[in-house]
Amino acid sequence: MLAKFLTLLRYVFTHAETTRQNQTDIRELQRDVIHLAVEMEKLRSEIRFGKETERGEREKQMLLLENVLLRFEKRLPAPTSGRDAK
Image (cartoon, rainbow, N blue to C red):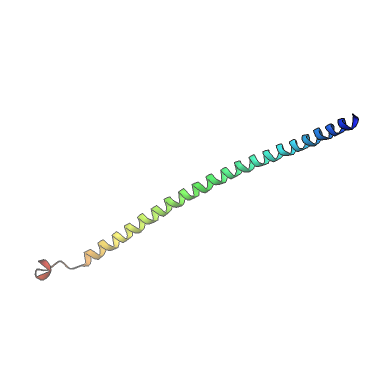
């Protein structure tokens, strides 16, 4: 009877220690998940900022190209009458 009691007591202490370790592991995993969520939000913000920057750069390039084309058109001679005018 004493052997069964000691076995049961050992079983309870073993599971109590395992439960404490599991709780510690769970808290650590929860911190990791929170950290991961924060890092993902930072990455999302960086991607959004990158897209906005790229869009601004594309708009600037289009305006520069339009400016160059307008300057080039001003340099062209006026159309003359003849074959080109028909």
